[in-house]
Length: 228
Image 1 (cartoon, rainbow, N blue to C red):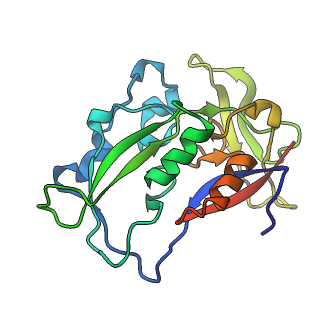
Image 2: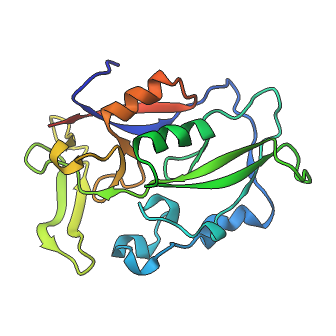
């Protein structure tokens, strides 16, 4: 895959070990994602309020007191990578990733501390990682050049302020549909979730993506998209 200017990326996870070490959220916190609450629930849009997915993946700050804060990582021979655990909605990340994000967008996103333990009864963690909560929710696809199908009424706004509808990838359409991101809509943002296109993925600027590669952060994979 070629890297360079003129691209937007989305962050993904990739394995760094042939066999991924076992990990787990500990104790009563195993149901923590159901218990997670928004920090300002009155400000979220109707899709986020419906909570059809994990609250942490909608692009809004969450209440730190309701988040899980202990993870078991028992394998001493395989240290957790910088992207240690998650499915792109949920992202458990290292201090190195946090520092990189803060360099680009200080005091914008949340990093909720997680005590990393070798054994369930440990009283002291061997490290501290963070749940990364991306707090930029943007409308970033160019409506003229994007060839995805819009499901709904693009110009109509709902009471919460969002457009009525979303971008949909139709696998039956040829040539294959594609999203094209708008630099004007992205502005000076470096990490965001798109309100209408695969909200459970975090997108990033080419500058941030190149910095992540240069820093050799482990466990991350970048997927590239066009931008205009």
